[in-house]
Amino acid sequence: MLRAAASLGIAAVGGGVSLLGAGVTGNLGSKTTIQQVISRAPLRAVAPRATGLTVAQIYRRDAPGVVQVSTTASVRGSGFVIDKAGHIVTNARVVGGARDVRVSFSGTDEIGARVIGRDQASDVAVLQIDTQGRSLTPLPLGDSDRVAVGDPVVAIGNPLSITRTATSGIVSAVERNVDTPDGFTVGHAIQTDAAINIGNSGGPLIDTAGDVIGIDTQLASESSQGIGFAIPIDTVKAVVAQLIETGKVQHVFLGLSAEQVTPSLARLFDMPVSHGLLVQTVTPGSGAGNAGLRAGKTPVLVAGESYSLGGDIIVSVDGTPVATPAEFRDLLADHKPGDRLSFVLYRGLKRMDVEVTLGQPPG
Image (cartoon, rainbow, N blue to C red; front, side, top):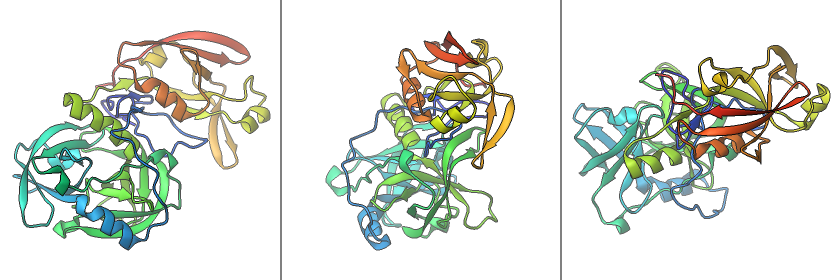
């Protein structure tokens, strides 16, 4: 997810590891490019909730937890409360390097906020306000791995400084890459046609259960209509957990991208295993590159999806089988730069054991 001159800390910026150079999590389906890995530890348990809420119901439930964020640089954006301790999540771009940050719940009464930490690679920042917990409305955090194209969504924010505005739409795509202002690339982003304008940045993208599935971060361009993006909440959870604990995020870089091997793909091309991750690209000088992992070089198109065949197929990490990008991400997420992992892979028909040392994002 972080493909620019640095990697999100934590593998996916969130606790974890950047496979390709970075990666934020989104919906990891049967075919996914592993870029960045995130931590598995959620900020808090999310209880099952009824689905199918209307836009009006979502707004009544979640709007009280959405704030407007402003700085001395006159930057205005959105944010939302995540716990009774007064922690507020927003975009790092909204906070910038400001020391004086203020938030408003009503659009008029502003409260001073402390910057707990910001992570430029994932474009996530955490603020904290001093107020009584019972007066706060924390928004429940969902699961962005389950987000699918066509899912209804609602964005609540402060576009053009118009407070607590709700817009609705659908998930237009998943697994997008979006660039941060500091030259990083966040992967697994959610694309939506819900109206997002200047001032929405940092606000929540919400599913029909009323749970936050992403942070609205940017438009494709200032002139674009119906094309907005959100950082997946799974990435946000991992980043926020580290920022609250240490004030910074440690990113791990593996340096490869991979696609899931499905039984049908394995049968079609006579692969030696029916599960695993087919290596697509390897970054020279990365942990994967230094370990000698090989990427596929033969392009094929299967059911409208493109693959590069002939590369290594990773089947386990430190003795744990991996069948999906999500499993791979979770295995890497709790590690740090310098950790050495044992990969079992197939190169052609030959089974091999390879030791890989995790590194730091380039730059």
